[in-house]
Length: 148
Image 1 (spheres, rainbow, N blue to C red):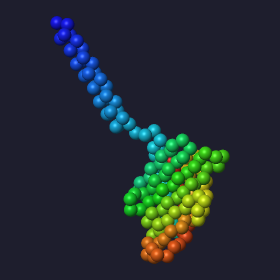
Image 2: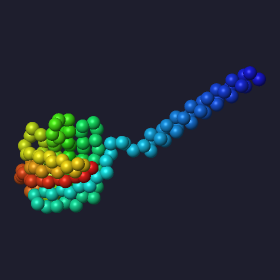
Image 3: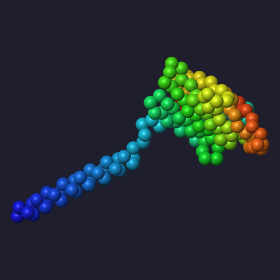
Image 4: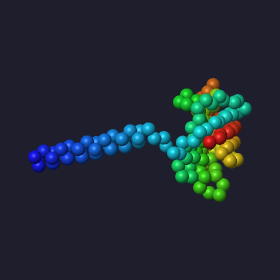
């Protein structure tokens, strides 16, 4: 009788541990990252407005990443908010307004960031190329407005 009771308790403990593990695993899969922010954006490259249906903003500590668009066309902006005045660390533009290129702090081009509440406006110039002349380097003016 004692051997059966120990076996039953061991089986019960293993079942309980397995149930807790499965519940934790399911809960982890369903959880959304707390840093994902609801967003809207507009992008203009050399005076051409680009339609942007998908925007995703994330923040980790003082760094904010803004992904605009998708695989074929879009922009990615990295903002650094550690100092007294936040700034754009980099702006990558992919096939927007017929232009692909980037700005990176310390490199060519420039970017200015203005902040108003949860809205960010990044204006500047990026180095890259035009879709119709991929072998000719060009500079493009950009303006990105994002709320997140």
